[in-house]
Length: 207
Image: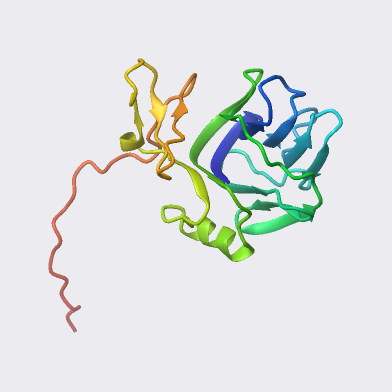
């Protein structure tokens, strides 16, 4: 589950199921497709990427330059893709049960996401429809049950916590799944107010 705004290219999350790496690694990929004619489908993919199973939205479902809330659910016999609080497609995908590591914004260092990612949530269970809609409506207060990774873009959440000179995106879930940051930076998209006015008394209009 992620809030993102893309310019071009693809790949929001890549959960890899073994240590082999590479595009054809067995695993699970959740991405915006902008290959070929820039079709901007949202896709989840389970398997090798060349022979695996896929679910995908219609062409141009994901609009560039605006914030989108994308959700990929992999559940036994019933997987689904959500965009901005709406379930767009559902179907069957092989279960994904093992994760050695997670890439955010790249696929094994070969393809990169161009845009902004403000939040990433990863759960150890499939959320219900109502829970997904809750997270869409209340992004700063997500469902906690099963929440295994919670990355929220904020200056307080980006720091070198282990002293190795590389910034981490701090995991707020309590499980310590912090992410190393390479080739990305924290930016503020809303300018802070130049000054804050004190509240004043509001008078009724004279007649």
